[in-house]
Figure (cartoon, helix red, strand yellow):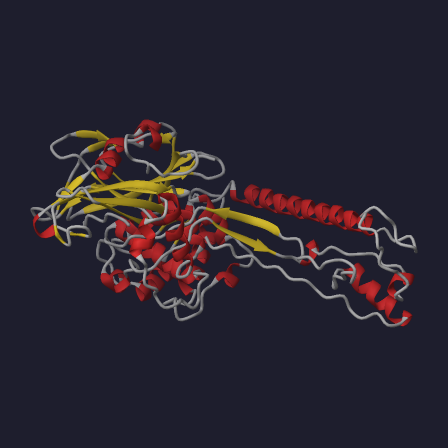
Length: 509
């Protein structure tokens, strides 16, 4: 295993429709019908045109992936993924309408010279009252849409409560893939994304996607099949999905045993590309380092996110991505250089020469200062030469789904596996309880996380078996997934073992 230290675009849409020319009475009936059916938005010429009402669909924290673990053939270390993206969508149901009487349509209304919005026009038309009525109507329609969305979600939730307990056939050493698929299957926001009725409209069919949406399509088909049965004895074959994965990443062609964490990274990258909202990337721009250094740290972090928006922006990144702050300090002149990088998971080391540890201790070890010397000496911007430096990580932004990879495999003296017993909380993993883990410029309350998935590895570095333990996203019941077999788990003490390899935590909201 490689060390793998990992490193918003507000898409708003607004428009106004100009008032049509109403020159005679014969046009009024057709215009009125258009207004009543919602196919036309008419703005009186005496009123300033204003954008249509928009409904906020939602926003999630978004980020990028550092790909030191990912081979160069699929590296996206130069890419940037957006975070804190708010998508605004205009629907025809949100369009406000105005009721215009025949006198007004014939031009019988004169503009009032009085600025009092409560004053009625000579023909009895009260502009302020009409606008207030339109706003109330729009608000009522928005509330109606919210209720419909809530009802649709509750209906989907009731359908999914009895699903998801489906095993996966082992196609020949594919337990590593099955383990990851079960953990992702129980990742609630990703599951709901796969059930979007308009999922195909999210596919990126531009040159920025290798698979042009086919990987996401096949993944969605597999997930929906896994959740269509209410029986814990049902089993499906992921062969079609595996075939598509092999087209994206050739290393997964065939049936050799692979690493579940490496497969996870390849898969998330491929899914991200398939639904990347950016379909034409701009040319890289040169960053003025001196100007950057003059900004406040919070502003620099925010600017880093904004640059990401120009290159990568997907629902996958919305779910899994976070931001790290990296601080280099020259031991000669004490000059500090700070950069911000994106991650989709954290590969955290295990303490050496210890039979047991805790995930908090492993996170703390990952974030602690390390010395860069010898061939690792970086160039000091102030000294203008390579100097011995210290490097430290801290979390700048927290993802919705926090994936922790326990680095059990080492290449130091041949491929070996550390069987250290790592204790980890099932509920309320608190990052703010850990010293120097959160960035000093972190904004907002620090979230707590609840465990919902574990990819386990038993055996040696050369021969082993992968299983998964997952919490159902709707019933909160735990189950163990061992390829085609699914078992109910009642004793949570069975979760914590020296086999735990990749931990999936969800933000406690």
